[in-house]
Amino acid sequence: MKNVLLLVHDDAGQEARLQAALDLTRCLSGHLTCLDVVQVPVLAGSEYYPDAELMLLQDARQREEVNAGRIRARLQAEDVAWNWVDQTGFITPPIQDSAMLADIIVLNTSLADRMMPDMIPIVSDAVLKSGKPVLAVPDDSRGIDFGGHVLAAWDGSCPAAEALRAAVPLLASAEGVTIIEMGEVSGELAEDAAAYLSRHGVRPRVEHLDEPEGGVAAGLLAEMNRRRPAFCIMGAYGHSRLRESLFGGITRTMLGEANVPLFLAH
Image 1 (cartoon, rainbow, N blue to C red):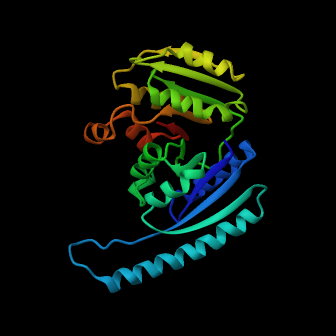
Image 2 (spheres, rainbow, N blue to C red):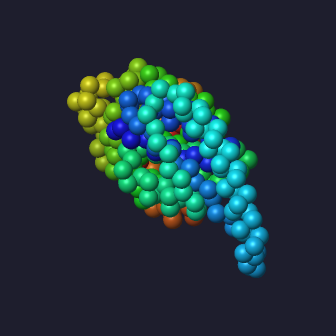
């Protein structure tokens, strides 16, 4: 894992993404690719106003040019290798295109007060369609201590196993890893996951926790609030995305409410 893809866009989560991406790139001794997306504006309503959309697009381009200048100036002073890619369009397709030669994508969990862009579908598309892990950070996060303690949520599912496997390059730096098994386990046990990590030189603790009345998502959130890990590893969308959208689910709840960074994979 060496190639880090960062979404650059002038929104409330950008500072959190930038600082997380810099810390991640340093931890991996890797390379940072900054994907700067000018988002195409969409006017509400059924009427089509091409002149108005053109004016809004020009305004968006000017804002992103100013934003790009600020970010580039900051990157010049950082001790990481980086390059810059400019794209125009809706945010999700450029991420998919740029992720082909990326190892991990840095995005947000969700933005406070439902501010745009809506990160939950962006993260969902990235983790499900790119085949790459996503590091999603809360918008008030200011860097990640990859030398800190890491929490891994385990339910025996394929997404949980993929997330744990993908996170191995980061766990060598961690001071400790705790695997928590909560609720129903569908496959391999947490002890099997711990044995896998031990073969990579990581010696995790395993804890079996009862599922609280509020369900697994509420239990995971409570554990994160109590332990305050550097980040939490978890599989994304163990059920279908449509089912989670219609009935709710652990992934959507965590993206909407988690107050620590999430390392997600599917």
